[in-house]
Length: 123
Image (tube, rainbow, N blue to C red; front, top):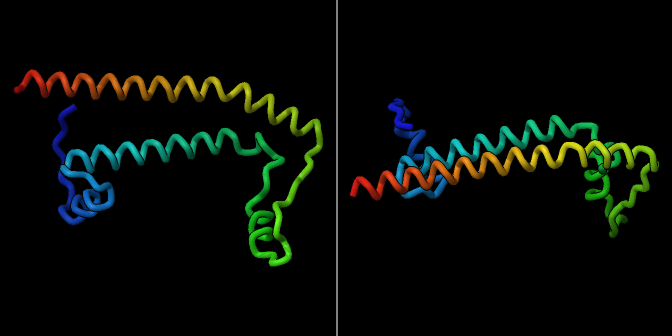
Protein backbone atom coordinates (compact mmCIF):
# COMPACT_ATOMS: atom_id res chain seq x y z
CA UNK A 1 0.00 0.00 0.00
CA UNK A 2 1.42 3.34 -0.98
CA UNK A 3 1.03 6.12 1.61
CA UNK A 4 2.58 9.55 1.91
CA UNK A 5 3.35 10.70 5.44
CA UNK A 6 5.46 13.42 6.99
CA UNK A 7 7.96 11.90 9.44
CA UNK A 8 10.40 14.19 11.27
CA UNK A 9 13.89 13.60 9.85
CA UNK A 10 15.52 13.00 13.26
CA UNK A 11 12.89 10.39 14.16
CA UNK A 12 13.38 8.60 10.84
CA UNK A 13 17.18 8.65 11.17
CA UNK A 14 16.90 7.14 14.65
CA UNK A 15 14.55 4.45 13.31
CA UNK A 16 17.03 3.58 10.55
CA UNK A 17 19.84 3.40 13.10
CA UNK A 18 17.85 1.36 15.65
CA UNK A 19 16.52 -1.15 13.12
CA UNK A 20 19.77 -1.53 11.20
CA UNK A 21 17.81 -0.96 8.01
CA UNK A 22 19.46 0.00 4.74
CA UNK A 23 16.54 2.07 3.50
CA UNK A 24 13.95 4.36 5.03
CA UNK A 25 11.17 2.06 3.83
CA UNK A 26 12.80 -0.95 5.45
CA UNK A 27 13.18 0.98 8.72
CA UNK A 28 9.52 1.98 8.75
CA UNK A 29 8.28 -1.52 7.87
CA UNK A 30 10.52 -3.05 10.55
CA UNK A 31 9.40 -0.54 13.17
CA UNK A 32 5.72 -1.09 12.38
CA UNK A 33 6.14 -4.90 12.42
CA UNK A 34 7.90 -4.73 15.78
CA UNK A 35 5.18 -2.45 17.16
CA UNK A 36 2.43 -4.78 15.92
CA UNK A 37 4.19 -7.82 17.39
CA UNK A 38 4.53 -6.07 20.74
CA UNK A 39 0.82 -5.22 20.69
CA UNK A 40 -0.10 -8.85 19.92
CA UNK A 41 2.10 -10.04 22.78
CA UNK A 42 0.49 -7.54 25.16
CA UNK A 43 -2.99 -8.74 24.14
CA UNK A 44 -1.87 -12.35 24.63
CA UNK A 45 -0.49 -11.49 28.07
CA UNK A 46 -3.82 -9.86 28.97
CA UNK A 47 -5.72 -12.94 27.77
CA UNK A 48 -3.49 -15.28 29.77
CA UNK A 49 -3.41 -13.09 32.88
CA UNK A 50 -4.60 -15.26 35.71
CA UNK A 51 -4.76 -18.35 33.51
CA UNK A 52 -1.53 -19.65 35.02
CA UNK A 53 -1.78 -18.72 38.70
CA UNK A 54 1.02 -21.07 39.73
CA UNK A 55 3.76 -19.20 37.91
CA UNK A 56 6.34 -17.45 40.03
CA UNK A 57 5.44 -13.81 40.66
CA UNK A 58 7.81 -10.93 39.95
CA UNK A 59 8.31 -10.47 43.69
CA UNK A 60 9.17 -14.17 44.18
CA UNK A 61 11.68 -13.91 41.37
CA UNK A 62 13.22 -10.76 42.85
CA UNK A 63 13.61 -12.41 46.27
CA UNK A 64 15.19 -15.46 44.68
CA UNK A 65 17.67 -13.30 42.73
CA UNK A 66 18.60 -11.08 45.67
CA UNK A 67 18.88 -13.76 48.35
CA UNK A 68 22.61 -14.64 48.56
CA UNK A 69 21.79 -17.93 50.29
CA UNK A 70 19.66 -19.05 47.39
CA UNK A 71 21.87 -21.06 45.06
CA UNK A 72 19.06 -23.04 43.53
CA UNK A 73 15.70 -22.31 42.04
CA UNK A 74 12.63 -22.22 44.24
CA UNK A 75 10.28 -25.06 43.44
CA UNK A 76 6.63 -24.30 43.90
CA UNK A 77 4.32 -27.28 44.10
CA UNK A 78 0.89 -25.97 43.09
CA UNK A 79 -2.45 -27.26 44.20
CA UNK A 80 -3.50 -29.93 41.71
CA UNK A 81 -6.91 -28.43 40.89
CA UNK A 82 -5.37 -25.04 40.00
CA UNK A 83 -2.85 -26.70 37.72
CA UNK A 84 -5.49 -28.72 35.91
CA UNK A 85 -7.74 -25.68 35.41
CA UNK A 86 -4.87 -23.54 34.17
CA UNK A 87 -3.69 -26.27 31.81
CA UNK A 88 -7.20 -26.71 30.41
CA UNK A 89 -7.59 -22.96 29.81
CA UNK A 90 -4.17 -22.71 28.16
CA UNK A 91 -4.87 -25.77 26.00
CA UNK A 92 -8.13 -24.24 24.77
CA UNK A 93 -6.53 -20.91 23.91
CA UNK A 94 -3.29 -22.16 22.35
CA UNK A 95 -4.63 -23.59 19.06
CA UNK A 96 -6.65 -20.45 18.36
CA UNK A 97 -3.69 -18.19 19.05
CA UNK A 98 -1.31 -20.34 17.01
CA UNK A 99 -3.72 -20.49 14.06
CA UNK A 100 -4.26 -16.74 14.20
CA UNK A 101 -0.51 -16.05 14.23
CA UNK A 102 0.08 -18.54 11.41
CA UNK A 103 -2.58 -16.82 9.30
CA UNK A 104 -0.92 -13.44 9.91
CA UNK A 105 2.47 -14.83 8.91
CA UNK A 106 1.01 -16.42 5.76
CA UNK A 107 -0.65 -13.13 4.79
CA UNK A 108 2.61 -11.28 5.38
CA UNK A 109 4.50 -13.79 3.23
CA UNK A 110 1.92 -13.44 0.47
CA UNK A 111 2.20 -9.62 0.55
CA UNK A 112 5.99 -9.90 0.33
CA UNK A 113 5.72 -12.23 -2.67
CA UNK A 114 3.29 -9.84 -4.38
CA UNK A 115 5.66 -6.95 -3.72
CA UNK A 116 8.59 -8.92 -5.18
CA UNK A 117 6.52 -9.77 -8.25
CA UNK A 118 5.69 -6.08 -8.74
CA UNK A 119 9.38 -5.20 -8.43
CA UNK A 120 10.32 -7.87 -10.98
CA UNK A 121 7.61 -6.67 -13.36
CA UNK A 122 8.84 -3.08 -13.04
CA UNK A 123 12.33 -4.14 -14.19
